[in-house]
Image 1 (cartoon, helix red, strand yellow):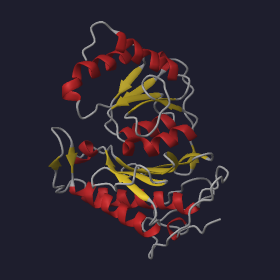
Image 2: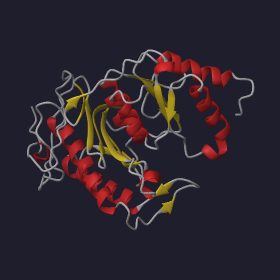
Image 3: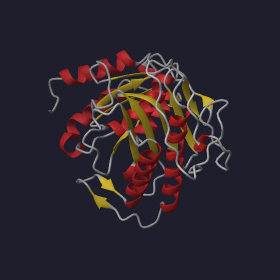
Length: 315
């Protein structure tokens, strides 16, 4: 088994654990980053190199420290689109992530939101998918609903994941074939079996001003069927809340891989299901998602399909 990095082998003041029996993780505790070997092809589930998960956790915890240090200060906000923001903190966090991956895993690619990505990242066997701040608009307004999320995809499939909400000190982690955890405690999706008993969540894409009638129409269709529908502004946290049983389902379009790669693994390992809006197989580049506890998947897809067939739908 490859050697675990120092990032996962020292106790710290954070008190956060990735999974039962794992060491407490110190953000940035690897003083001299070490290059780590890859996994053996055909390795059984749960045999991922410990350095993978330790690195994911280390980076998101360090991201959280940076986010909190600047929260409420001068964020040097720039506009990427009419309502799409980027702050100096997004850039600082992503730079830290890219440097860490380059030092520890020089053969791996990085796909992240803010800086130009490598030309070969789409075909790289090992690809780290990172969102430095998921919920940047919330962060820029001082609303404490944001996180950092990181997954390592192998051949296009997330294998380890970490999502950290620094304001609540909640660390969601997952390892394919092993499980999903919140601060080291196993999590499981809810048992709701109908939309009438479900609390759902959704998000609005950055093109919402152009698609508002369709977006609000579908939102209304779910409001008419569910117990409640919420919109929090961080897709990764929304999905982790489905994994933890706080929400029962989630849908959204206009998503990027860094919005969903980590959190969808958390959902799947917590017993939930993910698909495209039409129910076909999900992948992290498809740009849309329906996620649920599994019991509600067909009913949610039916609501979306019925809305798409409505004669008064605006396209």
